[in-house]
Amino acid sequence: MSWNSQGFLDSSTYNQQYGGPTAYELHQKQQQQQQQQQHYGPPPPQPHLPYPSGNFMPSQYNINPQGNPAQFYRPDDFLPPPVNPVNNDDDEIPLLEELGINFDHIYKKTKSVLNPFATPDISIMGDVDLAGPLVFCLAFACSLLLMGKIHFGYVYGIVTLGTVGMYGLLNMMTSPDKPCSGIFVTSVLGYCLLPMVILSFSSFLFQLNGLIGLMVASIFIIWCSLSASKLFATSLAMIGQQILVAYPCALFYGVFALLTIF
Image (tube, rainbow, N blue to C red):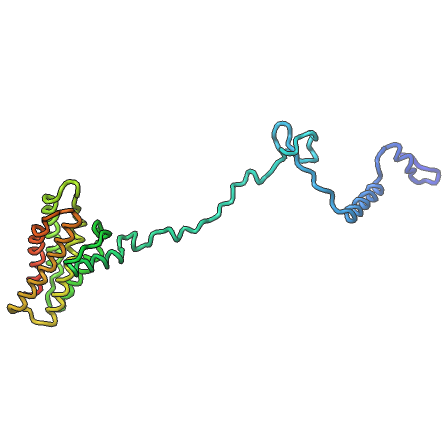
């Protein structure tokens, strides 16, 4: 550091000694760069080239300017591809159908029971719906309750014993190629109980104690047995055996007729 004759710092000697720009020169250079950026816009970003060893290195520290620009670092390559949510609500099974409640099958099976001389629909042959039988058994018990007969236990007990008996009988009569399940027997016997429900509600309005009542009850018993035997014979391919199946069915529904009349 040197001083001039007037006692001030000699800048030329200082610059020669230290060989670097002064603070004033740095400030002037910074202002010029800012003016250039405002006039010409910011400089274009330099691509980040990879380091020779494969590691990422920023451009200002990149020591390999001859690198392949096609191999620069792309953060999007490591992100998982976007997943477009697909709405599959139309393909989902309805809740009632998942629970085994199909109103279309219930309607077709009820229609088949009410008309025992018609050919049943093929779609209901292997149906094991228990919603309809449960409703019909409960309706039959409630109709007896209207006449002061509390026979809920009798109704479900007779249904259970009749189902076990018919299950054993049908397994002995059918071929091994057409097995019979207990749920299927319960479903058919429960659906064919619908004429007995009609008879029970009719007995609440009319007196069925005399000979006329026995004749009407016999008609309903034959109605129930024909409907049940027709469904059993058609579903289990029991050709020429409908009359043999109708006889035990008539005994089964005759017990419900006795509960209704007496």
